Image (tube, rainbow, N blue to C red; front, side):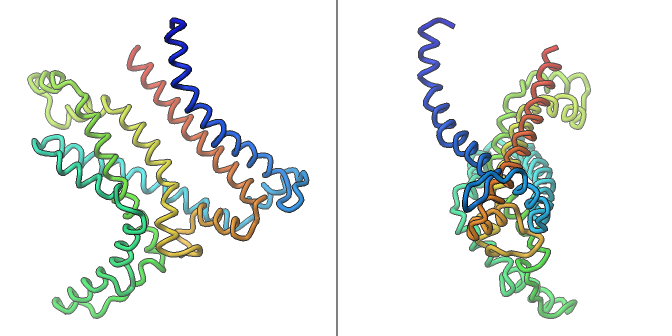
Length: 291
């Protein structure tokens, strides 16, 4: 790289890197420091904050729910997004349909929450529909299930996450499908390969880059579902949707900053490890493909 190119490279990279250092790395290092200190005096506390966190039942519940939510949502989102992209890719006029998928991303969170409340509230549209259906068929009576106040709230939150994030998933899958040379597919078809064979031996291996991008984005976005959960059910929702973000918010309100710092360090470390593992897998697959 020439001196002039290196100069322009540094000019473009430095502002972003400086912003990351000032607004991300420096505050996180301060959090790491606070995780070994008391909240009031700031005195060194060793690993007592970490011990208190891992003995906290609310923390263990929140971790379990967050892991469960992520493990359930990501496969559903990736699979449904891929199936929708396959269908759209075979259509000629798909531009306006892509806009429909992206529409939930443009909606304010408060609006999304209001819609879900109107549907799943105890006197919401779903219960009214089921009650009316039961009256017409004579199979059941009035339905008044509080979906947001019971274990069903978990699946309501899953549906909300998938619905809102489906748009970018479909667009990324479509971008990957569009990058597959049509000559490969046509040659395979001429050689007698069926639809399933083309899918498993040509399409899916060509979409590994898209898959890793979608998984990482979906993983990170699964930690942003707190807004919907909080606005729907408050700071202390049903146990099934009590997530890490609820716990952090409650600790912040109660000024338990020492425990919050220790839990934040643990969460950040896990996130970093998962992202690095996914990146390592991506690089290994890329190296095998080149080799």
